[in-house]
View 1 (spheres, rainbow, N blue to C red):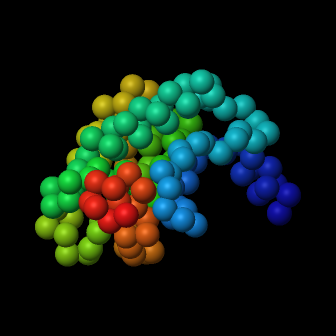
View 2: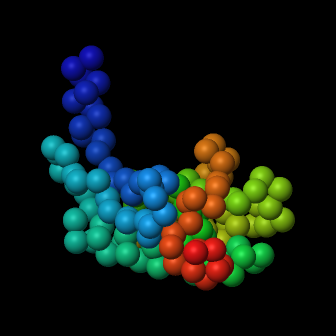
Length: 146
């Protein structure tokens, strides 16, 4: 058991958790602090990549809703691994969304455009299902839902 715990420390990676906030506010994207062990990506670069990934995600829109997917709360988690693979967990507003087959590709292309990201893997999930509670105040304002 101790060996497994030690092994986990050497496999540290940066996680951006975009779980639903207790109340709708703009999600804060911050990598978890580095644990013991060496990081292969410097903290300054992680901060820049984080900002650039958020900006890239804000360029992706659901064609039926005039708000970007980041502000809608469709992005659940972004994980930057030491090999610079970006793993994105996302959802859609509904399982029957007409762009269900396309939107993950749009997210992948947007994230792959970020300098410092080698490749992006997008995992589409419906657990937990999306609700309007995940939207930021900015999204609510754009949709006249305040």
